Length: 373
Image (cartoon, rainbow, N blue to C red; front, side, top):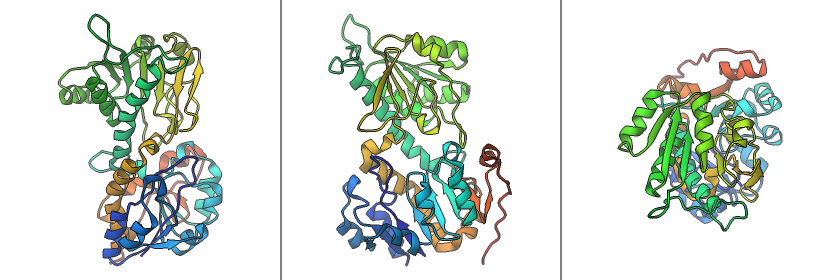
């Protein structure tokens, strides 16, 4: 099959969907890979590396979309990108339809595009591809919080994460005990700060305690405990995700007003609507704003801040799925892995995800795919 890798156009997105090693695997399996020139530059992969791996470098963006049967990219498609698609193509990306423009999904339905959302693909009840991005986001959140708590930033509280003898460390409150929360908590412990993790799921709290040897405080999340935790926090990290849905505001504006002046919020849920009512999307080059004396960091594509690591992680996690489709066809790939089908949002002109269909008032049809053998 023909696989296309366009250069990302989202503002300051430096990741690339497939690294040269992944292209090599596809080429060795007899597939043709078209990659837009300089698509890997942001992650420090050159055109020459891709060419040596077996890819064909394409110098016209439209050609990538027109020649490929499978498109692999990262950011949700824009309306202009959807217009470049050919009928019945397969497009893999972090589509994030729950917070996207209805026009995008409607045009995909018109063109009978098969849209596969990386964030919805499961393996043993784990969002495998999203997992790698969440690991990066959790660790980066702590680095970011540490930076803006310092005195070198105008509004920072001027405190160290770990404190010193006789001086208490920073208090870090993490909402969400999933992959983001686990990686953030591990990074916080490594810096010697106090960490409190809130989640509604007691099993997740027990899991994070077991992994981190109870070096943390875990609390069942409800409006009362969240309000207390937010008020206590020097650094608040929000890592809540509701798979395929917009994230509810668990931290309202009244809670934000109770926070210490110069405290920091890192809202990692912003790409799905934001967990904090006062959050709004920011960019890597202009990442923060101050509201009610609280520093807000709300970059939706935060893994792009470690673009090379993130590109390897995404490529490693997604390659088997792309290879399976390319080697065996979509039908056989889905029949051989029913969890994979959870990532398919549109197919043959219909919405195949109940939540997305309900959100946009679209006709929903269960996925019916038959073997091509």
